[in-house]
Image (cartoon, rainbow, N blue to C red; front, side, top):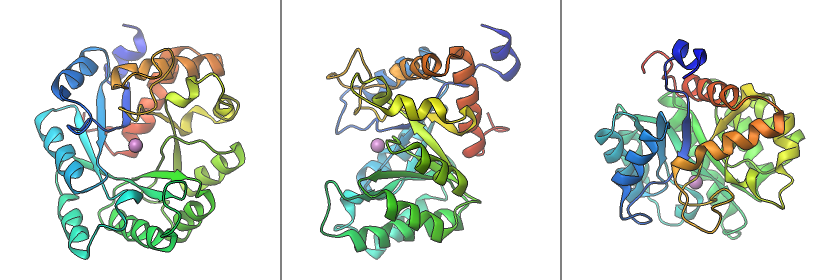
Length: 267
Ligand code: NI
């Protein structure tokens, strides 16, 4: 343990985005316990539909160091009713729900309902603003519409995370200007990615760590199921790119996450 940890407390390695849900794991309790033993200090489990939102809240209530982000992702857009938004609003008032997510736009998988996606996305941003929670944003092949929605909704006060950011440096700065942080996950370790050149240039004050488990497993475990215990691999890769100590990466990104989720004085 170094002085940094001693000074700030041993709580800075934070997985801001994972999906530890029973549809993907049959040993969630083991995965959570392993992650917490392995130095992860806080896990944010992201739901994306009715069932997973409920499960994220249940796990957050069960484990002190687990928090929930809830919302309806782009895959849900055809399925949700006004009542589902009422349910979401009620759930947002639960003590351990710290963000609205994962929400966003996905024109790679869903090309035929773009306007409806934007409508549901913006409704949920409005809810986030009403309850003063940051947003966790999924964006695939929809960078311009995502940017416009965030800009028009003026999210500066609630802020948020561009989850699994994969676009240009220029766009990263545009999102940062709106109040967003840049979520960096396993993709940064992939051999054929150019993302490293982008992340290298983004000041550490705007970066948070995430695994997106069970997806996007970092090298050298690519092809296996991802888990939060691999978060250090991502921190290590950023340290290598920026030529900084891994502790510097862990502590600054941890602070960024605690500030965003308004947990700095509560842990
Ligand atoms: Ni995700």
